[in-house]
Length: 108
Image (cartoon, rainbow, N blue to C red):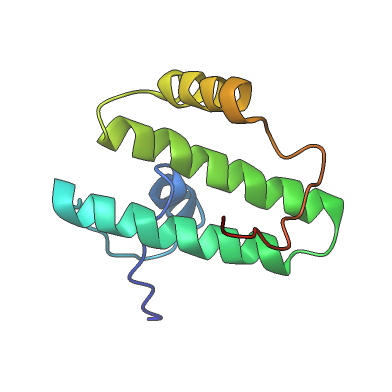
């Protein structure tokens, strides 16, 4: 039986069961969960970097967003609080839409 040792989406065991697959899972404690969510985020971001088609890129971004929802809850808030912070930072410092690339800054 192949070993995966990774965090999976909540309905994956149900899907595997319907396919008649044998599997083994466990429920993580809070510390392990946070660690595995962070690992999963890194995995999904790397998959986004590797995607070459728009559809695949959007699929990977959706996975990243799902993980951001979970991470915001780990930190005691929901994604709407993260969005508030994002909007405030955009108001104060701008976003990234103008594609500005800083080359250097001269010290005075």
